Length: 152
Image (cartoon, rainbow, N blue to C red):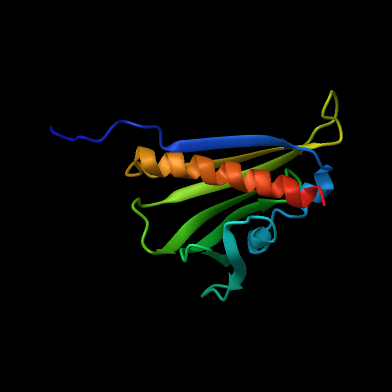
């Protein structure tokens, strides 16, 4: 077998403590509102879906990339959303990714009254190391942008 690919994890997990109250952060975590905080997005808008039970949002990035993301799960009790990318222009170099953003109120200690947030991505096995690195840095940038927006 002469596969020259470097073995890599197909998941990414980034986290941050955001110096803002939980309610200010959770309020921003809606797929259609990501352009309100993520500086790489030109716009985020709800797309008419073929099924009334399906929530699809188009993210248009400033570099021209367009992703249609489908909300797979949302919990206002456990404070998370899970979404998948269902289409992309230009096409992605991997088959699929499912991402989850979770927010937790910090209830004690030095960061009491602030928010802890995680953003994971689980990629199909055909995602290479470059995809995983790109996802890591995009999540870090977005979390920093989220912190700025929540603090306003």
